[in-house]
Each structure stands twice: as C-alpha cells, then as structure tokens.
Amino acid sequence: MTILQPEAEVAKLLRVGDRVQVALPEKAAKAPPPTDPKLSPREDAAAKACLPCPVCPPTHAQPGAPPPPQELVVADRVFRACLGKQPSERIGLWQEYLAQFPGSSVRTAVEAEIDALAEWMRAGQLARRVEKEDREARTAAQSIYHEELEELRQGEPAWLVFAAADWQDVTDLRVHLRRKGESSYELMRPEASGALQRRLQVPAMWIKSPGFEYFVAITRVNGVTTTLAGQAALPTSVAVTQPLGQAGAQADSGSSFRLLGEYVDFNRGRRDDEVGLGMADLTYRIGGGGQLYSFQMGYGVLAGRGGRVAERDDTLTVHTSGYSKGKTVAKDDTLASRSAAFKYSYLGAEWALHRMFHATTRLVVGLDDSGLDSGVELAGRIGAEDGTNLLLGASSLAGLGRAAFVALTARVLDNLPMTGILEVTNRPVREDIAIRLIYEAGWRATKHFELTGRLGYNLRTIVHAGVSVGGGIAFHW
Image (cartoon, rainbow, N blue to C red; front, side, top):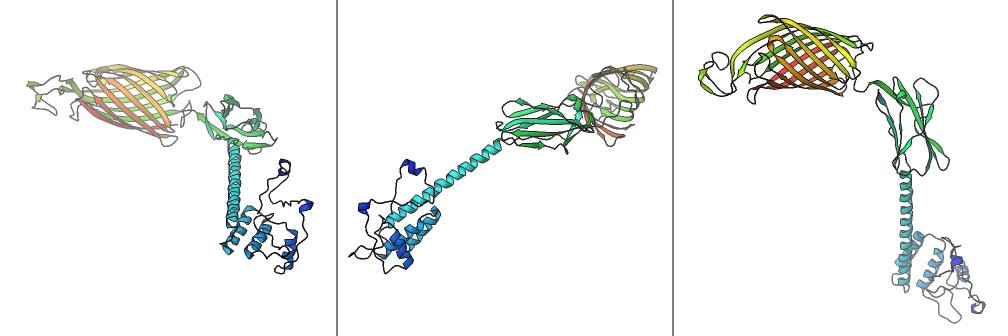
C-alpha cells in the first residue's frame, strides 16, 4: 500500500475515483515478470500491468525468488480492486480481506487504511450536513410571512404586515388593492418598519362597506416574480362590516321598547329597607344628523320602605314593627321604617351635541303619598350609543329621594353589552345615603329581541347592606 503526496498543481486536477499511475525512472525499470502459473490468465495480465505495492511484495516473483504468501497476493488484488471506488466500497473490500486473513502481516496497515477512509466519509457527511443546514437556514430567512386580512370594521385601522429575517434577496414588494366590484387595482408599496418588517397601512377610503380585495407580488434578485397573497384573478377578499364596537347596532332611525324590573335590598333581607322598581320605556330615534337624536317616553313605579340607620345600640328603645319588632334597637338597625311609593310617567329627549357626546333630559310627573309631584333626570353620554361609552347622570324623584350614577358600557363580545354601574342614592325615603355596585349584561338574541340581567350589592354601612337582582326585555325595530 502506498500513500502519495502530489504537488499542488497536480492536486488541483485530481478528483475522487481517479486512477494514478507513477512513472518510474528508466534505470529502475525491470523486465516484465514471467507468467505466474498460480494466477488465472486475467489475474496474470493484471499483475503484469500493476506496479509493485510497498505494503506487500509483488504477486509476480523475481527469477529465482520464492513465491509470495497467499495473503499478500490477495491483498494486492484487493488494492487493485479498490482503485476508482468510493470510500464505503473500499472499506467493505478491506473488511472482507481481514475476515479472510485475520492474522495477515499487513493487518495494521489495512486497519489504518480503513480508519482513514471512515474519517474521510465522516468529514464528507459533516460537510454535506452543514451545507444542507446552511442552505435551509438561508431559505427560511428569505421566506416572507404575511397574515391575510379577512374582516374589518368600518373605521378600524388596518395594516398589511410582512416579516422576514433576511430581505437582501427581495428587490421589490408590491401590494395591489381595489374596492369590491371594481376591475382595476391600485399599486402601493410597503415601507420598512425596523430590520425585519415591511408594512402598509390600508387607506381609510378602502375600509368601507362592502370591503376591498388585494394581492401581493414579490420580485427576487434572480428576477423571478411570485405572488405572496392572492392573485390578480383571485385576490384576497376583506369584508368591511359595521363600525368598530357597534356589532348588532340598529340604524339611527331604529326604535325600541323596554320593560325593566329590579328589587333592591339594603338591610340583610329584613324587609325594612328596600325598594322595587318597574318601568316601561319607548324610544324613537330620529337620526338624520340633527341635534335632536331621539324622543323618549315611559311609565314607572318606585315603591319601598326605609328609615334612618341606627348609629349605636339603644337598650331603652324597642322596635314597634318590622323584622325586629319587640327587640331593642341595635347598631345598624333601621329606625322607624316607613313606606313610600311614586307612580310616574316621563317625557325625554336625547340631544346630539357632538359626535361623541349626547345629553339626555327627562321631565318626570307622578303621584306620591302627598299627591301630585314632579322630578327631573339629566344624563350625559361619552361615546357611541351602541359602542363602548361612559354615562354620567343624576335624578330627583319627588318624595323618594335623589340619585347620581356613573355607568361604563363595553362591547367586548358581539351582541353582548356589559355595563358596570356605581350609584349613590338616599332612596326610598330620603334618609341615609347608600352606595350601589351593579353589574348588567345584555344578550342580543336576534336582531329584534334582547334580554338584560342585573346583579348588585348595596350598602348604607358595612353591616347594613344587601343584594339586588333585576332583569328586562327589549324589542327593536
């Protein structure tokens, strides 16, 4: 076996599988050996054409010399058979040789050759794996990611965003938009937003019902143009529905009729500080963009019992009625509980003072224990009626007392408005002030029908407190 180190100029010309023949000086050349009677004609011809191998003596003996051992003859054949073959094939041939001649005198050299070939194979596999991983990384870095739009609300800001780890391969990125129903596109180009993103804000003129269509084309440095989203003949379609936060909203000219009932307890279910409410309301929305937004009229009943809250224990005073009749007065009890009621009707109007601010005024007229009486209710709403809004109001209802409230309504889910209410009131008999915490949720079951539920907690003191429940239905047209 011979290891050759070619010169640099020669090494550049060599490739895996090439056969190398070394030309000996003429003075070292010897006469062709005679035919070896132990070899077949084909093997003898190959032996005559083969140069001596330094690992083992030549298979052809010199005149007068004894013939070489059989293991060396086979080693020489294996060496010649390995020429031009791949490393894995060479390893297999040499392993077969060692299995046939485990005690061969050239075993050390053969094992070194096998190890060298195996290392060569591992190095080649590693190089190919690194090259593949590098190629895949470059491909992934040059991949552009884009989440297609599907649905928007009118007035909702919209962006078309494109992200990639490597933009060097892209020479042009084009977005083609058109309104639904049109045949021609308008060309727009996204702008860079940091090192990894390109984005385009969709103009507000496109975010209108019924929506718009778009497709995206990219051109790379090799001149190839492909589509990233949609196609000219089959673009990505984006539907534009009602304004943001107004899912399920009625038109400005819509009307509604509501029925609402609520029971409020202020004193641990003792029936000596409580109030009940029943109300029917009809609202007609005018719309048209004028300042008068809607007319309201309705009928209601407020009735209950109440009295002053005891500030301390009084062992010398006994309750004469109610839950604690016959017992001495204790702190947080209701003193001298009395009933009150007010049956009323009202007429109101809602005024559109600004696109985002409406004011409501109501004149209340009714009957209480003293006869004909009146009241007034005032409220201001910040935000759209059928969107997220903040309502602030105050009311005075004749002999029943006063109330002020703040209500925040949010439409996190379509057709499911939720409202949180904080109310301060001295009803039902104009005595001690109470704080009410109320949660209200509505469900727009259909376009014309809505259900409402209420749950609250009411406190005059930490101990003098109770819960409230209520609900209602509404019809829209």
